Length: 427
Image (tube, rainbow, N blue to C red; front, side, top):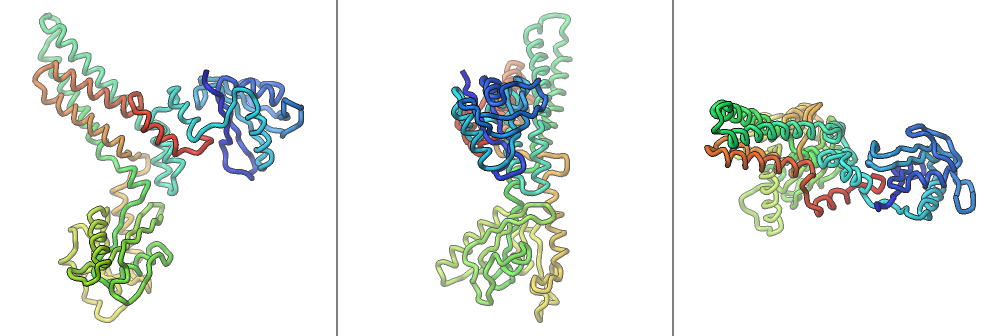
């Protein structure tokens, strides 16, 4: 029999209210022992909670009895809305722990039971994990779209289309000699269906990266020594994150600083000044790391000569424009000291980032999801090029298997363990 679990599902005390959840087959009995009665399903009821061993009062709380399977976990569920003091929460939890058949939940166990009982699929679970970790409004919106099942509904549509196409392929194979099954017409319909589905899958592959949304758009500041990179970094993030000095080569390693600007998460990277020759072995390592950062950058802020910019799309910055001799330099005129050009730079960064991140009402794909969607696209491409219906039918079957892997119907326990371990206890 499945254990009955309990945990504090709201914020850490002290708080105005503490919500303690109990999920499993013994949830109703636990409520009956605590409150001495069970209210009607899905009806909040005020009750005095007592220790069943000695009748000592614990707290006066709102109680909810939610019979399964129509609950968040798919099991019988009880919610206790107690006062949020530490002593109250500790007393109620200790009383629950003393009841036979009850135990404290492990990290992510409530969500894992929801997944196991088909209340959520793997994509919704990942969306919930992102929602719990969201720090910007953009992250929150995209995570909520995923957690609410928008992506899952889309791929369920793919599954339905694949089943229809597979049925047509089987019909063409099984009844190819029958006069009432026009082979050419069916094969043409299959080809059209595969092409339309492949187009939708390709559009999904173009969706933004969840990793970029979560970790931030990688903006790398690069250029020769003493170009003003560290000063600009500090101005962008609003604090002294990097040491500023007139001594060339002060920055020897890359410095990564996360910052939210205009509701968008960025990861700004200050790098060692780039130059061809240096007699300092440590500085040489820093230059190598700077070049690695440039290779992985989403946006490059280049504070050097235009001809030496590492990429054509680098934003050319004419930094330190408040100094003598800077008037003729090409690029965005900017002074981190006086603030000149900073507003224009921020606007440009947000404009670039907007093309890399999901818009309002969109969601982003994790690397796992993108890999599976890419596999679906590959199987559809193979099916479209197949001249044998047997091969075509097999490619369609493989595409359906990838959808099962996307939703978690065919996954590995190790991957699930890692995912759920990242949740808090009350989830």
